[in-house]
Amino acid sequence: MNPNYMKKINEILEDIKFNLEYKYKQIRSFIHSIRNGIRNVFYFFPVIWKYRWWDFEFFLDIIEHTLKDYTNHYGKDSHFLGDEFVRKRACVLLKMLEKYRECHDWDFKKSNDEKKQLRRKFFIQLSNNIERFWD
Image (tube, rainbow, N blue to C red; front, side, top):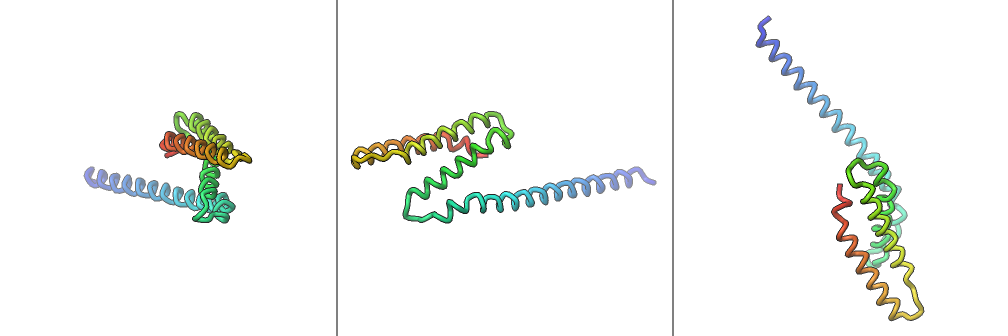
């Protein structure tokens, strides 16, 4: 047999092998996405069920739920350098959010000013760390 034909056959077989491996990875990724999507529906269902477009507290519920998810997975299921630091940042943001929500006082003006200040600090910290939460 001609060596050029064998070389051509080997190239074709390598292309087929590469395409099969690529398709296998695509199928695995698709199945993983479906599994995560179903999990997210159940995980976020209680928050989304209570969501109202006119109420700011529900927006905070979504952020809080997301940060809790981050703290559950960063450092355990993640695989990048600094993931433990990101988890700690999410914990700090959760504590800030809890403090904001606990800020109730009989003096409405004082409470409102304090809440405004805590909310401002929270969103500044969130904006400073938002890129860390990106994958």
